[in-house]
Structures are given as structure tokens and as C-alpha cells.
Length: 315
Ligand code: NAD
Ligand code: UDP
Figure 1: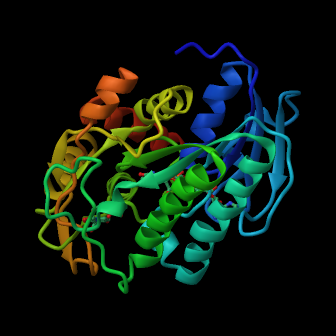
Figure 2: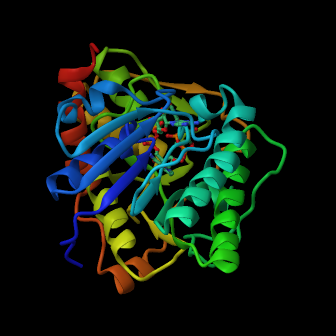
């Protein structure tokens, strides 16, 4: 799985949480990197340390518009990922998912690049099968408040496979399960960043619903390792990449409180519409085909994330 070639990489959404960690890995591997972002949820501070590096370029661009570039690999991550942000302008989210993926596949086809799509466990919706293997086709509401994102990613996957069938475009489709770590936006409303920032500010932790819903949390370094392995492999996917450890939201809150301030309270808030009740990946395919599985426990990953937030909560 060694990566000896000096690939020219385009990372859409490269100034975001996952994109910026991917860029760090590719730069450390001596590759060429073009970071493309419209800064909707991305931040220049995430990639500041590479500006002026001869192998790094930064382009402000919106993926809903076409662009011409010469690249070997496209890591297509551009799309708001947290419910607060993707619901801010749901029509734009749907456009980003469809037009953005269409434009990047067009680019991949034109220049013969390989494209990896950052898809999501949300394609399984509120799953009736637990845990979720790649073969499960999902239970998704087409008209709800999460649909712009869920259905957007589903049509993005469809586009990838139609480009492969019609034009032999090289695709890799990765279904990412909840990922957390340094550089999450403190205000993005995701549960890990919310709980950590609330606890650090001495506020009660906001549980939505009764907190019995589950999620499986993958530390960002593990996730990026899986992403790179998938891109370098001969597997097309779709492939689940996530940590199969499953926790209720109440268990997560308790863990964060233990680490930061056990005296803080939990508040119960309404459960948002269509919030999936359970989520846990089957990762047998990634273990078998990529020799990948997550190494960092929630306990260790939370420690690393908390220590990052302690020094970055102000900016
Ligand atoms: P993020 O919001 O931090 O990053 C998304 C990036 O895309 C941001 O930098 C944003 O400014 C940029 N962007 C958004 N719309 C754009 C547009 N129209 N044109 C150009 N750039 C645009 O989110 P993230 O957590 O880093 O997620 C990255 C990708 O991974 C997303 O596609 C997301 O759907 C997927 N994903 C993430 C998770 C997770 O838990 N983090 C889970 C499943 C899937
Ligand atoms: N959640 C919560 N409190 C918060 C933020 C989220 O209880 O402050 C819940 C949310 O309702 C969901 C789970 O935590 O059941 C994960 O939410 P997140 O937005 O992080 O990810 P997603 O729902 O997209 O998996």
C-alpha cells in the first residue's frame, strides 16, 4: 500500500475538518496538494501552516461551478457535514451534493483522475438493520429536514457509479461514520464538539431526546488512514469506514463529564426530526480488503480532542 508516486491531489473541502487532516497527511507524504474551498464551514487557520509551501496551492472556489485543473486524484469532500450547517440552506446543500459531485466527476473524466467521494452513513437513514453493512439500502425520508444531505449523498453515489459505467471513470466511494477530533468547529452543533465546548465553558450538556440513541465515533486519524488506504486500493466501494464501538449519547455525555467536570448537569432537549436511533458500521470489508481498522479508542480520542479544544476554544 506504499504511496511512492508524487500525485497531484485536489482536495475539495480541504479547509474543513477532515479535508485539512487529509492535506497534512498528503503533504507529509511529499505529494502535490491543491486545496479548494468556498469557506462555508472551512477555515484558513486549518491550512495556514502550508501556505507558501511550494507543493501547496489554495483556490477559493465553489464546487457548484465547473473548474479546469490538471490533477491525478480528486478527494471530493466539499459539503457541509453537520446538521446545523447543512440545514442552514438546504437547497444549497442539495446543489453542492449533486452539482458539486457532477462537476468533479466531469473533471475526473476529462483528465483521467481517480475520484474518491466522501459519502456518509446517513445514506442508511434511520436504519432498520443493525449494525449496517454496505449491502443495506437504507431507510431515508425523502422530504424531511435531513433529506437535502442524505438524498444529496445518495445521488452523489449514484452519479459516481454512472460515471464509472458510462465513462470508466475511476471512483472510490467511502461511507464515513461519525468522526471527531481536533479542528471540529466549536459551533457546528455536532454532539462531540457541543459536549466538549459546553463542559469546558461550565455549561450543562444538551442531550437531545432521552439520550438512548446510539452513534459510533471514529477518531480523525483513524478515519484519514482508512481514506488513504481506500484511495490507494483497487476497491471501488461503497465501503464503510468508522469505529464499530457503539455508545448511547448519554454514555458519551457521562464520559465527557468525567473527563472535564463531573459536577455539571445534563439538560434534555427535543429530539430533532428524523434523528437516527442507532448507528454502527460493519467494517468487515475494510478489514479484509484494506487491512484497516480503527486503533484509537473513544477514551483516548476524547482526551486528545479535549486537550485541543482547551487551547483553541477562543478562536
Ligand atoms: P466540514 O464542514 O468541516 O468540511 C466541509 C468543507 O467543504 C468545508 O471546508 C466547507 O467550507 C467546504 N464546502 C462546503 N460547500 C462547498 C462548496 N459548495 N464548494 C466548495 N467548498 C465547500 O465537514 P467535514 O466533517 O470535514 O466533512 C467532510 C466531508 O466528509 C463532507 O463531504 C461530509 O459529508 C463527509 N462526512 C463527514 C463525517 C464526519 O463525521 N465528519 C461523516 C460522514 C461524512
Ligand atoms: N446530539 C445531542 N446533543 C447535542 C448534539 C447532538 O444529544 O448537543 C445528538 C443528536 O440528536 C444525535 C447524536 O447526538 O442523536 C449525533 O448528532 P450529530 O449531529 O453529532 O451527528 P449525526 O446526527 O449527524 O449523526
